[in-house]
Every structure is written in C-alpha cells, then in structure tokens.
Amino acid sequence: MKKPIIQVNNLTAKYGEKVVLSDISVDIYPEEITVILGPSGCGKSTFLKNILRLNQPAEGSVNVFGDNITIMEEDEYEKVLRKIGVLFQNGALLNSIDIFENLSIPLEQHTSLPSELMEKIIRIKLELVNLSHAINLKPSELSGGMRKRAALARAIVLDPEILFCDEPSAGLDPLTSAALDELILNLKNQLKMTVIIVTHELASIHRIADKIIFLDQGKMLFYGTVDEAKNSGIEEIVEFFRVGSF
Amino acid sequence: MARHRSTSEIINFDEGVIKPIGLLNKATVPQLWMSFKAVSGLTNYKHIDLSEVHSVDSAGVVFIEEVASELIKSNSLLAEKSFDDVIVNGSDEVLNSIKIFSQRDLPERPKRVRTGYFERLGESFLLGKSGVIEILTLSSEVFYWSIAALWKKKGARKGSLIQQAGLIGVDSVPIIFLLSFIIGLILSLQSAVQLRLFGADIFVADLITVSMLREMGPMMTAIIVAGRSGSSIASEIATMKVTEELDALKMMAINPIRYVVVPKFHAITFCMPLLVTISIIVGIFGGIIVAVSYLGISPSAFYGQMVKALSMKDLLITLLKSTIFAWAIVIIGSFYGFRVEGGAEGVGKATTLSVVASIFAVIVIDVIFSLIYIA
Image 1 (tube, each protein chain N blue to C red):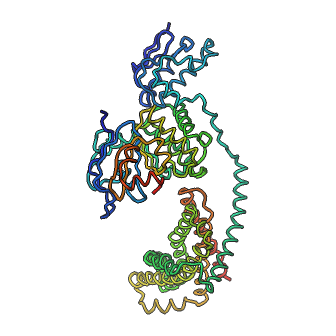
Image 2: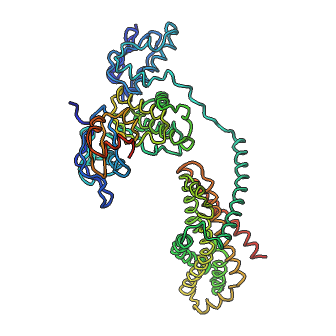
Image 3: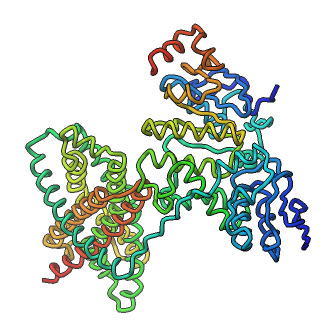
C-alpha cells in the first residue's frame, strides 16, 4: 500500500466568520488523478487554496510529501512548492512578458540548466500543449483557451510531482479538451505525476479520474472511484452523473 | 580508446559509449552537460547507453537527445543513423519519457518580428493622428451626452452624480486644503524675505492673492485632481473595457459614454471650481499667517491690501480656467481608458499615460490662459 502524498486532516476554512469548508479529511495517493467536484460555491477553489497554503486553514492540517505545510517555515515551504505545479483558473500568466519568458521564469529561478537546454525544454512543453507557434506572443495576444494551455505548459515546466489544475477544460473546445486529458493521463502514467483537478466536465471525469472528491455546502459528501460514486446512492452525486451538470 | 571520468561520477565515457548513471533530471543535467561539453574527440563515441538510468524528466530527455544529436553530427559513421540507433538499452519507463518529451518533431521556432526605427516612427505618427481624431470624437460625444443628459435622465445610474461628486470633489478636499495651506505659507515666506529688503512688506498680500488666484490655486488643484481622479477614471474605464463590461453595456443598449463618463463629467464640472475656490482661500490664509507672524503686518492691513489686489475679471477667468482643466482631465482619462489594449498591463499603462497627458494638458491650457490674463 502506497503512502498518501497529500493528507488533509480535519480541515476547516473560513472567510471571516463564514465557514466555507467544514472538517474535511481525505488522503490523496501518488500517481492518481483526483477530481474535486461540487456545485458552484461549495468550496472547491477554497479547498485547493488551503491545500496549497494560499489560504491558511482555520483548523486542521495539510500534509504534503509527509510534512505539515500549514506550520512549515517559509524556506521549507518553498522547497515543497518546487515539486508542485499549479494551473490557475484564469491562467495567471504574467501579461507584461511573452510566453517563452513566462515559462523560463521557474527554470531560471529553480535550476542551473544551460540556456540552450532551457529553451529546448520550454519548446517541448509548449509543443505538448500544441502552442509552439505562440512562443513569442504575449498572453494578451492569445485566446482564452490558448492562455489556459500556455499556463499548463508553465505549470509542468519543472516536471512537478504534483499538478493542481483549477478547471483546466473551461473555455476549451472538445478536441483540445480531450487532447489535454490525454496529456494529463500521460503525465500520470509515464511520469508518475499526481494530479488534482477541479472540473465539472463529465466527459473529462470519465476519461481521467481515478478518484473523485465530492463537496457540497462546505462538506465532503464522498471520496472514491467514479464507479463507486455512481453507485453511492447519494442523491446529489447520482443526479450529477445522470444529468451531467449541477 | 579515450577514457574520461566526469567529476560528478554519474556519467561514464567508455568504450565508445556514453553511459549516464542514475537519475537524469533538472538537478543532475547541468553538471552532466558541463562534463559532456568538456569531452574532446566525440568521433570516438557511437552510442548513449541508458541501461543504468533509472528515470528521466524533460531536462534529462533534452540532454539525451542533444548528446545523440551531437554524436550524429560529429561522427561521419553515424551520418545515416537515427536517434533510435544511437540511444540504446533504455528501460521502458525511460523510453516512454523520451517519447513524451522528444524534441525530434519540434517545429522550427518562429522568428521574432522586429520593427525598424522608421517603421516605429511611422507607426507612432499614425497612432498620434488616429488619437487626435479619437479624442475629438470622444470630446464631441461627451459634450453632446452631457448636455442631452440634462433633459434625458435615462441611461445613467441613479445617484451616480452624487457618488462621483463625493469621489472627485469631497474626497479631494483634505489633500487640497493641506497642500494649498503649505504652498501659501511657503510662497509668503519666500517673498517676505525679498520684499523686506525693499521695505515693501505689505505687498506680500498682493503677491499671495494674485499668485494664488491666478496660478497656484487652479494649477495645484488641477494637478491633484489629475493625479487622484484622472487616474481613477482611466483605470476604471480601462478595467471595464478589458473585462468586457463596456461591451455588456452596449449589448444592453446603454451608451457607455452616457453611463460611465457623463456623471463624472458633470461631477467634476461642478466640483472643480469649488475646489479651486477652497484652494485659493486656504492658500491666502497660509500667507496671512506668515505676514502676521513674520512680517508683523496686521490682519486688517493685509485684508485691505488683498481686496485691492483682487479683481472680478481674474476670479471669473480662474473659474473658467478651472472648468476647462476639469473637462481636459475627464476627457483625457476617458480617452486612455477606452483606448486600452491587453489585460492588467494595459490598464496600468493607460492610467500612467492619462496622468502624464492630463498634467501636460493642464500646463498647456494654463499657458493659454496666462496670455489671456495679460491681454
């Protein structure tokens, strides 16, 4: 039995006095794709932000690679971050620089690779997301879907051990979305990457999810495989898989 | 056969074979690359043996393929060979990673398009020309809608005029009050020292009154309003444009100029003369304090001299001037807001440009009014 790569223990998150997530505990295992599901406003993004320590949990702890990151010193936390890639909902590319420079930032800051190899790595990562032609363009010159793919290329440029994606398929056409799923599967299967995704796309969930975490009104209703979810008898989950949306 | 041992002990160059050992990743590749670059006589090597490589990441794959490429290039015997012939003994896991991150089918990197100096000069000229046309069109629309809005109440949010008057006018009062008072003090102090030399102490009242009324009051107020409200107008409209809020207004059949700009235009037209009046009064008050405490002039003497220096013509021209300043600030802020391109970066640029252009416009308008005063 593998050890969990992320352990969320009794996590409670609040915005002011408002409780957004309540007492969530879950173990996420390496080399699995875990999909976080739930209706709008159920706390999916907050859950992701708490796992990443972008928000500090009100109660509970989050262990990543076995260490509690909620109480970790800043330099230790930075070491953990180097093994993590994050694709934000809106891409979050730096608008003042071109795509090549956006991807070169993590490589320049966290490796001592020579520039000729660095350039090759960046071009490979852009080719993986089918964006080689956009290497010299600025984010403002790309469509929403292209920005999302460029942001994914930046998230995987350091070959992270854990990849977090906040709605990666939103705004993408079905073909690009399927290609993205294929890439995520490859990253998992070939490179043993652990992937945690927030998505509502049913087709995508069926293609890639090993496990799903179902959140509703700040509580975790279910954690398990897609088949288990369908047969869970939990009304909200069964309804989601029947209708395909919330 | 040449034999090299790398300093890292994680690569062997032996028997015509380059044999990396262990992990090939972004941490180990920089040193491996240096070791490889230091090797002479690449013609002796025919293979890269991956039998002792446990795992590779994208940096490792790039390293392997770069080495393979160098071997093929430098060894005529390998000229007809492919990467697959040169890279040998890789485990399935390693070969899969190579397959994912291979650079073999990478398209050529597109060339950066560089524009020449004269091309850029021409572009700036055309941009400037279209800018002049745009700002004139915008001005005419703003004036049209601001007059039309006096009769047609639809198309604006209820209470927006009061809200804007608060933001542009009321919120500016403390900073204008403070700066005008300090300027009055400084102006009075500096002139008092000089006037005392000639025994013309009393004329400090004339100097302060005329300079605050004609120049310092309206100018300082305009610069503060350009910095506070002009930038806020530009950034608000620019943000609305990049987030498609302006398009949303248009799709709801609401004119964005009427809805967004006109309330600001009305508010600033109403508030600016009041702010300038406050600035003049407070500046003169600062002057009185110096005159009384430093020069020993009585307040009544200062008042008498001040009244003599005041003229209705100056006051009217100042109020007209301050209104023109206000219009320039709103129109320039809106112009840069509507003209924004790109995302957050564009908003920042639009804001900066609007402040610089507003202050420049204020100074140019001031020069024109100075000529009117003289005439």
